Each structure stands twice: as structure tokens, then as C-alpha cells.
Image 1 (cartoon, one colour):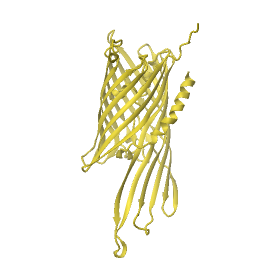
Image 2: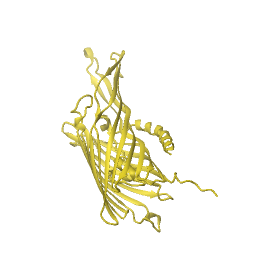
Image 3: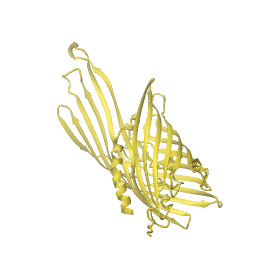
Length: 414
């Protein structure tokens, strides 16, 4: 069954990598590696992104690999997620709207033994995409009319993260886990200058390309603390090591001639510490809190360590199930609510960007009540250091399909 899972993941991975290179439309994706994305799946998305203290047999949670030991020894779980996002940008009284869609991730979780699980998957780590231009003019020579020019800037690409992880439960309450991550992708930055009204000036185009790859590890822990027959508290924590990328940086400059140069720069990802707490009552009510920090100011970007800013993220989440066995369908639907506040690694002279959002979600069980469709709607706003920056509001709809079926049961024939 492991081979079947690998083949399924490989087939869907091809579909994931291509959309990861589409535009995000946010002007702030021009900084760093683009807009970063956490591997939030199913339950977590509708709960504001809380993850570190969540563990469930019916969900995959790569944010804390210790959660993989929560698995039924007779089932196979696969999760595929899509999203559609609308954003409004406002600057100097001018408003612009954009829309995009993405295949966010594909992942599987399988049992290796009792209380021992394995998960693997692929998701977007960063997304880069913007395009804008401006018109200017140069004074003409010898009393001639000014010469107009057009400057254009655009970018595309992104980084993907392939992970495989395992977790084992010890002493009935403690779970330990580890993820191996492989990040890879290409970032393309393009700028050009053209002179539409003059043949005396030669235009110029520059294409900078960053090819990056890296392998790294996440370590996770979850501790289950029973409070009573119906109540328990789960403490979770993860730690990720900082690591440099293997990088290839090339620049192609086209004017009257074409010049290609190769450069050596250091790029890296930071250490990350995440802690979480969840309270569970009767397996129907879950309250969760997450805190995370990443040391982006300590890693190089283009060999400089003062380019990016360290970040923090705080999330609150709630999930409520009216009844485990209900007379009506909506009694077995899981209702979710979440809030999050996060700081961006994008560093400006007067401060960095921040993000605040509210999410609502539902878990719609399918016929077996183990497989489900998870819907989540998120509304958020980018908080800028001052009103002079571009103001961005976004609205995101996520659809996650979680297949949880009995694949390991032997069929009986009459």
C-alpha cells in the first residue's frame, strides 16, 4: 500500500507543481522568496491555522509530524486541496481587483503499525508573481521633443516542498515525529526598458533567475494529558533547523548584445519554533491556540543578513460537532472558527508588514462519515507601516477533499 500511495502522490504532484508557478498578483510578492505558505490542511484552515496541538485520525497535519501516530491501523488517508482567492488593492484612491486559483497541496497518511504512522506530500512553500509598469520621459537632444520610455517589471515562479515524515506514540501519551523536507523551485525576475517613440535609444531587458534547492528536517512532539473521562489537553511543539539553499543565480541582459553572467550568493531558511495547546471535550468541542516564531533576520538572502525580518504568528481556533451520531445531517457537520495574526518577513525601513484574518469553515462528512469535504472561507487584511503603502484586502475560499477509506481490510468471498 505504501507503493500505491507513492504512485498516487507522484501523479498528483505533476498537477501541483505547474499551478505553483502562477501569479499571486500581490505586489508584496516581489520581496524575498515571494509570499510564504504554511502546509495547513483540512481542519486547520477553518480554525485560523492552528496546528501544533491538533491530532486526529481523520486529518493530516504536517505542521507537527508527531500527529502522524494518530491513525487507524486499517485505513489510508489522502487529502487534496484547492483554493480561489480574490484581492483588492488600493493606492492613492485607485482601486484594483484580482483573482487567482491554486492547487494547494496533496498528501497521504498510512499506518505502518499500531500507533506508528507515515505521511508524505507536496505543497507550495512560496508563490511569486507580479507585473507593473510606468511611463517616463527623457529630455530631447538639441531642442528636440522629450523621448518617452516604458519601464516594466514582472516576476513568476515559486518554491515547492516535498515532505515525508513518520511518528510513533510512546507510553500511551507521548508522540514523537520527524519530517524530511525537500524544497525546490525557480524564481524569475524580469525588468525591461523600451523607447516606443524613438529609434535612437536601444531598449534593454534583464532576466534574473534563481534556481534553489534544499533538504531539511522538522522535529515534533505531542503530549496528551487526560483531564477526565471526556476531557483531555494536548501540548504540541515543533522545531525546524535553519539551512542554506543550494543555489544557481544567472542573469541574462539583452540590449544590442546578449550578456549572460553567473553569480554566487547565499540564500537560506530560518530556524522555526512552534508551540500549541488544544483542549478537547467529548471529541466534539476543540479549542486550540498556536504561537510560532521564525528567525528570518538571521539567515542570508543574496548573502545579506539584514534584508529580511524575523516573524511571529498567533492563531486561535474552535471546532464544534453537535453530535457524533445525529438524526439529521447537519448534526454531524463540524463547524469551525478561527483568528490569526502574523508578521511578514518583508522588512521596510519603517517596519514590516503584518496580516490579520478571520476564517470560517465546515467539515462535511461523506457517506462513510470518515471521508469528508472541508470548506473554509477566510477574510484578511495586510497591515502596512503607514497608509502610504498599497493597501491589500483578500478573500479566500478553500476546498479540501479528505479520503479516509478502509484499504487494508481483506475481502471475504463466499
